[in-house]
Image 1: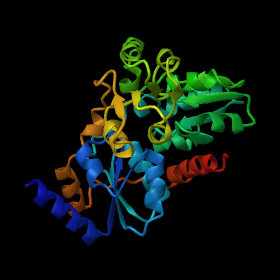
Image 2: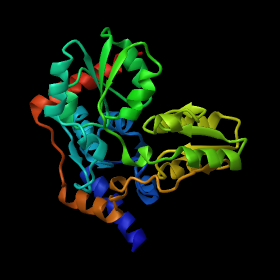
Image 3: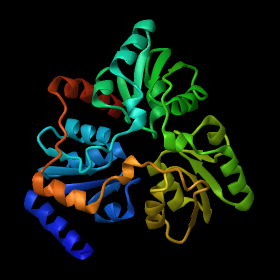
Image 4: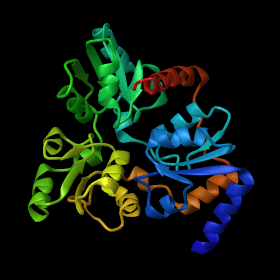
Length: 301
């Protein structure tokens, strides 16, 4: 049945001129099937550069929205419509507008892990890889940072700007305990420690690298270390092993697990291609404003 399902997905992909994208946190079988595996913004840019008519985004809702914003002439599908991002849902348009009114001279920097509506209310977007560069590129001394308080605190400790934090968080990364990192370091004293900037400040302080998923893969490939302690969602284990099969990756707390990222299945991908649904669209006015915030990010060197 598995082979038949894969063959049918590949047939439908050819028939619909589709490209399949998978985030690093997706199940291994989804990553294996995908045409491109990566982080959310990078995947959307790759898909926009293809001649595909259909984008199947195996991820969560805000990722599919970005793909729709960058590829307005393509059909963007999210195989599991219930795959949302709890952190993205923690910031509301009304709440952000109220905060902006309290700090009228502040620039709004939004992490790409936000809804299109929040991006439309922001001056510029950022990713986990470029967040510090983005913040420091702005002329404003005061920055409203949404939605992740941990990433905001990471930036605040490394810039002379005043950073006003929205109190959102990723339940998976925020759940990683410093004690788990400490024990792993005792068990593997020669290991390099790399953690995601969505982790708590206490965890970040214990790391050799505080870096996003793409950066972790790069370090895994080029570092001399043979063992790595990894503080991010367990789904990255598959990509790390692909990138550096001879190295060992220790996830000190395997329950760092995003349930929404695991909702996508091969059967749902097949159904999505058959029906060309669920389709993700962004209202034109919201898309235009969101695109400005995303494009401004791309000008930051």
